Length: 131
Image (tube, rainbow, N blue to C red):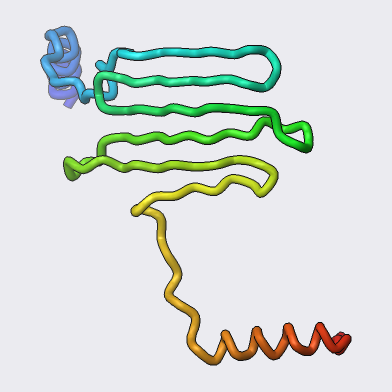
């Protein structure tokens, strides 16, 4: 029993000392191709970044009306099926608003819901409220 354990441990130690030959995934070997940054210090900025494995991002910032930075940009990255995920966005006083064909879209509202919303608007205009 002890001899078997000793032989197994010796095999593990010998195997771990051998050089490990493996292909590295592109995300581990990616290189920066583009890294451009401009910042005027007044809330206006521009940023662009790209790597050799297909990751890209770009954004432009401007001062917002409420003291925040408004941003508009895009980013993309490769998918495992060979496609590319692409997103654009605006981030401003109205929050973060992304856009992409990959984002889920709810089904359309049934026709009766539109009529109910019209009725609710009419009631509010007449001063009718519910608790």
